[in-house]
Picture 1 (cartoon, rainbow, N blue to C red):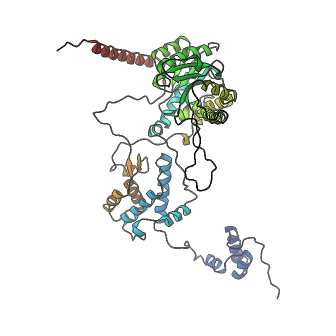
Picture 2: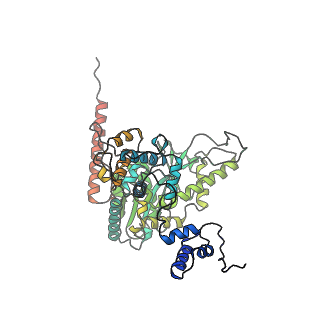
Picture 3: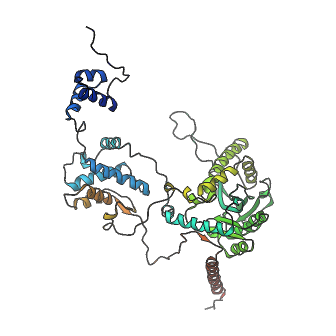
Length: 510
């Protein structure tokens, strides 16, 4: 017999969507359609549709979860906050925390050995996949994490804005500069290579196992103009053969450590920066980090004599506030590795010594690695020019503030800022068992989290020397900074004189 109704076309073999369920319920309740007919038309199981009509299908399918929905929601919220604060934890830590929650609440423990396994972990991640994800954490040193906070960044932009207005540089990007040194290593890393399957230790021919590095000082303006490069070799004397074939107008020097030191920075400031910016009209602004080699009374006096303002970045914030680090050096290092591979292939893995480095550096410059576009983009991303503090968004800075209180006082602060890291589960079980057997879901989450977290704020001891650290941005050409530098230099010279006097006193023979 022919059917009395035609089934709707549907490409799905199983299941239904919420839209089909709503239409089927509407036809049954409003149009008087039978459950059997609606089940056939919308490809919905008859029993499932009947349960929705009677409103008796009010629970999820499957066994109940060990933690309640409220407890899992609080745990997910805590995991997300820990990830935002830079203290994210891994799967074993989550499993140990759940074990502590179940133990502290005194409920039956259905897990083998009392600890959730991988199956429970996969189910938990599947239930909360819309809010949680597992990612490889990028290492961030604690000093940078604590330094890159909103208060420090706002203070820097307040001082930068005041300097720009005072010097009249609002529309003069060519007068705003950033300087920083970077190291060029002669090692290209460990790229993956093709080899025979099963070979355990494939070899790759290299020039030498010694990782030589050359320091290059780079300076550019907010308009994308680069000043001549300044190369620093490791050595006591500079030879002519180390300065041949390099980029045009490049300057060379050497230091015992191979890094930029005070004497080399003074020479760069006088012979490269001042001579390279004398043609610019008006005041100049130079932004750089607060390395010891950059700060001296000689540099400050030279800056005052040539209408140059020196703005020192806050400590440990160069990753977000230094234009060269943000926009230039990454592309330069990628191009440098390509130059190294090409050089090694052409020279049959000859060593990159001081005579060959200038040639490779010139090749790097000619290839356009020091891009004007990247320099301008770096200043824009850092919000320095155009002046825009909003470019430093919340995901670039830390919302955390290190705590110094004890673990007993931090239970009430678990949702504010845990200055903590993951610890083992041995002591946590003992601590959790000492808690009351009846806990609210919120208190249970706090107790379990705190039992797996330990404070990482270093404690100061009386037998160690206390060092004053510069945290905020600072204008080195201000009166207060000049007085502080002069006092520090007088103290340093006095100690040096005292030391020389003690060593020059003749010792009477016995």
